Every structure is written in C-alpha cells, then in structure tokens.
Image 1 (cartoon, one colour):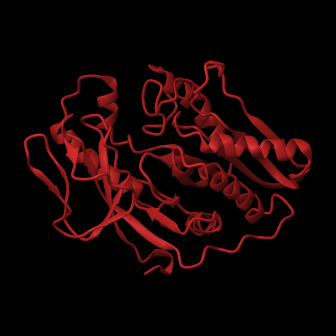
Image 2 (cartoon, rainbow, N blue to C red):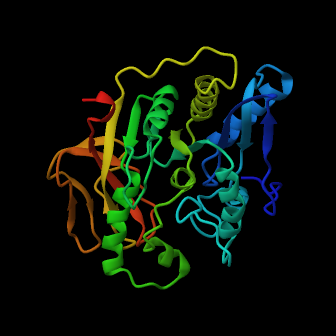
Image 3 (tube, helix red, strand yellow):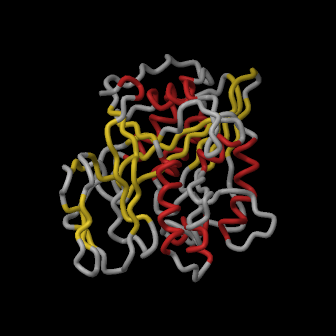
Length: 327
C-alpha cells in the first residue's frame, strides 16, 4: 500500500476530554488490504484537528493502521493473521506477535472497541456482534445490551452473531485432519485461534463490534466507516450530537458453520458474494477430487474466499436468528 509507512511502531491519535466519559478505541487496517477504516479514521482526525468535531466527554483513541507491515505490503497479513489467536506473547515469534504485545494492553485500557474491516467479495456492509450474556467457558460476557445498542446504532441493517462458537467447532474439525507443518497452520488448530480484537476486548471486561464496511475497493466503504464512528461517539454521548436512531428492521443472522479449503484446487461453483442465499442441497463448491460441497440447509454464504489457502477458512454458512426480535 505504501512503502513510507514505518513498521516498527504504531501511530495513535489520542483525544482526552476534560469531562469524564467512556473510553473508546477505533481500529483500522487490522488486515493490511482493508483500508476503508484507515481512510475513515483519518477523515475523523482531520475533523477533530480543525475543530469541526469536538470531543466533549471521555477518551478517544484512533489507530488507523493496526498492522503496518501488512498495510505496507497491501495484503491481508504480514507474517500471520493478526485477528486470530490475539493474545500477549512473552516470547514473540513473528511480527503479529509483536503487534499483539502492544495492541492487547491498549485494548484493555478502553471500555468500547469499534473495529473497521472490509471483505473480499461483493455485498452490503454488516456488523459482527458478540454473544448474549453468559458464564460459559468459551466467551463469558456481561455487556450484551450495550453491545447490541452499539450494533444497531452504526447504520448497516445486517447484524451477524455466532463467530467464536462457530470457529471453535471448525477448530475441532481441523484438529482431526491437520498435520502441523508450520506455525501458521499450528495457530489454525489452536482452540484460541478464533480470538481477535473484539473477543479479546470482551475478555478484558469491555465490549466491541466489528463493522465490515463493504467490499475492499468499494468507494463507499470509507463513508460507512466514518459514519459509524460518528454514530458511536454520539451514542456514547462523547460528542454533543443527537443520539442516532437504531436501524429499523435489522436482518439478524447467526453463523453456524465454517468450511475450510482442503486443497489448492478446491473451487466454488460460482462467484459467491457474502450473504448470497442458498437452499438445502445447493452445490456451493467442488473439492479437488470432484466431491460436491453442498448446503446442508437453507441459509446464506458468508465470507467466500476463492483465494483461501488450503487448510484455512474457505467460507462460512449462516442462518436467520431471532435475536433482537428479527424474523
């Protein structure tokens, strides 16, 4: 993306109001080829610097480029996926481990996270929501109401839950078949591999959502991200602005399955976009040996990635959810 971006440090923009309030952190370019969040954050920084927007309460931290190496290379990751297995590592082994050792304490210092991303295939923006309040071992949580309110305030109508339990089931399947050959593959069978920015934020007592602003190159994606930051600041009463109305008639979906690419020659039956509907029995893909990959029930294709590496996520499957009163 840019050979002028330094890879030895993170550039933060920090604003602290004189009046107390929430501590919000907004992150962009966790994946280096997802630059809409960077553009949205830079736009907001300009507004704050010029006095067009004034922080009235609380603390705001803006991190436009979370993974500088991946951003500099214009690719998803530097040496591995930063948004998986995100924990501090006392013995860092790769570039993303060093980032995690800075990013994780930073997240823990805040109350709320808005993480801005984009996706590979065409499709409309959507919000990734965490679990309901629970005391389970996988992802205990007690801020579901606040997180749901944030998700409904961002703007997109489509809201998706179920990330971590779905990924945990995928890990079980992966463990049964994966021969560990390198560190990237080792991480993909770690039960904690599904933990990224929002999951880590919840583990530290905060809450947060991921906003997928649109397709990587969609010129409207930075606008979606910028509007979401403004709406978040207003909803948290960190700026003097009307509280945004919650999105009307949200489409609530739940991830239920992750399907991995098993061979480089596995292929899709068509160019799928995220949230394309499928019916039970529809052929989604074909394995390298000719075995069809069929939809097990009616639902939606999510995050289809024809360029996925063998042994990694190929696509997800989602179904309608009754959460938030959605049909």
